[in-house]
Length: 468
Image 1 (cartoon, one colour):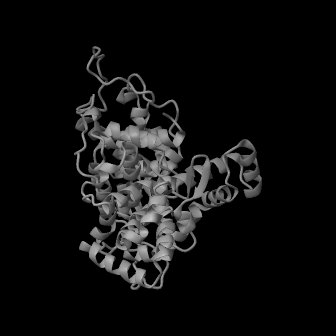
Image 2 (cartoon, helix red, strand yellow):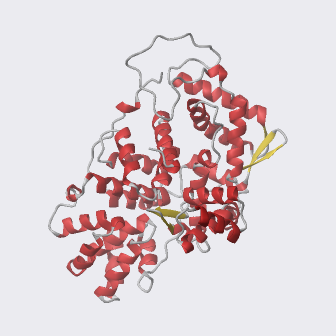
């Protein structure tokens, strides 16, 4: 039995500040210099080339699905296999990878290209972030053996970062027996931290406990004894899963990180994210490029840039262009577009009121209108329904996951309107945001609490597979 119950994991109820959270995702990086990658790490352009190679089939499937507006029917899958020269299994794998990497998003039954797909050929940072999202979701890409208890699988997933750290520190091939020894040690530590039975001890039968948690739909009625867990088989599964996403290569009884995998582990260890450099001037650029350039500025200088950009255009064309940028797939730009519209003021009211009828813009538009009508920005979120607030929380989390640091994504939990983690996960699953899976996977990878990370990872799996 674990040392604490996830149902008692309460969030601090604070005023949601989604725009501030998203901006901090990028501005906080300016307070310290970025650490340099280990010697021998390929430049970003070469890493991006390798990431494009790993995701080549996923990109082809995503572009085909978006162009055909496919709904996933059997006829469409057969046609896609023929058009792309992929087997049904390859097609299914490409589709799963495209969704997990943020290359495609489902709006109802209609796939739309994600912002990363639109930037795939020109933005190395978008490519690397898409690959890292796939790297974080390796256990979804390569499902665990069906006959292994979910609790045992969760322990291995939780222990894999230590295995990757050993591979990264070794800077070369590591024998599988050494990795297995480390995995066994880490599982023992995890059980000791949770006050569970040690790994090498056979537990005695316990009397039924009426206060224990009821089993969930996707968990067994009792965890398999630790001594019965086939760790060697689970290590093979984990290494195969990481190899499937291009993080490592497997040899005869050894494993080696690829340059991509080595870089990704370093990024996780340093808790930094690669971000594109902002251009120096924005007046002559499109709204989207202007907003990207302003993303790393603090609010005051950003407003000055917005005013300069607006002064060079008619109000109607500027509002139209900003709303078009807000409709894109990059959630950070969505929030920044409405910050720029706040600078426009009254002339933007009609366009913003019309945008409130669009699901992806509704929460932002309602906040804008509340502040325009005189509400304090600290209290403006009260105009949102619970569902709208949850949708905005997921959208903002997507912005942080795409552009921010993992620690900020963890702190973003505090802005949720729900009082507990299980309530938040239930409502996040129900709200139907197209980035839900990616957000939950990123949060599970970033959060230091093993019990919470496990619950978030399970929720991501349920959304990915269409479960309740």
